[in-house]
Length: 375
Image 1 (tube, rainbow, N blue to C red):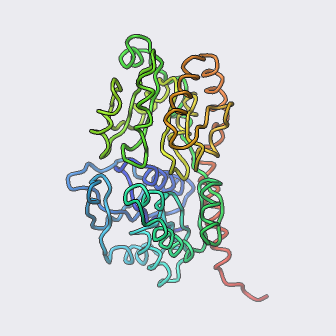
Image 2: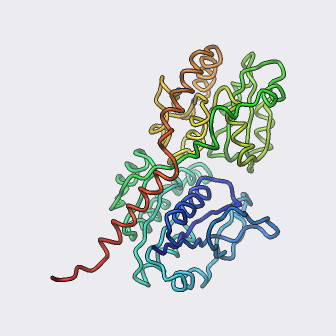
């Protein structure tokens, strides 16, 4: 199968869309298929990611105003040419909004089936950044996804949102987690002593530092006795968060085995953003044997079993975040039980398993598109 993955973001970018697109390409190669990636060009001078397993066509791009880490693709003939030259059997649209919309249009013109993967709560982002525009964002989402042969939603909450806004032909497709990289035995006591020299309970956040992530909800946690907040990631909110979270340790962006070591060395993982269609970092924490505190909204509802693998709190409730951390900090046995249950829950959610599910969705679409030959 010859697949063109059109993605709004790709490594060396660090985010859920980029990571999922990379894992999809890797799995297709592993299963003997031929993927090609089309993505916005990274910033000039960016070091390429040597782990990419297939060719990548970069479309000219510009940084998003106010958020230069995000690149927005410019109109280009390279996209349609890539579909033709690769002789694509199917187009995979990863979180389509700008480049993906053009990919959908090109696929339709060429008669190539398209599978669209919904990954980003753009309506929630519009509400956060502009205080308006939610309806317009949903119109755009509905327009591109309705044109696809199939839309894949990462969680039941995302599936309900899409259904409620009139998007047809939906299936559930979750995300995998690297259970070999993220595992409890990566815990590093030397790192823990460095982060919490007085033996504090380490509460970590991992992700982008941007307004929609609401990391400032951890401010009350910073005031708890015997607790140290550790923040991993970067983004436009970092300067403000360094003021809002007194005593917190900011480690910047971390990846690979270094990130896995940090995850496993936490006592509690706290995610604060309410707009997650899935939330990969929650799965990585669970694979690392770390109990999770997350909002009762979006993707975490599928991942966190309240009172079994972690705790859910009302989205946006800073008091509930603080009290959830207080309860976990005071209960080492509870943390151990939640962490073990979380690891057991995700052990079968490998990228290979969900990658095979994806190939099954591709096959269903191709079978539907394939003309029936009379006997």
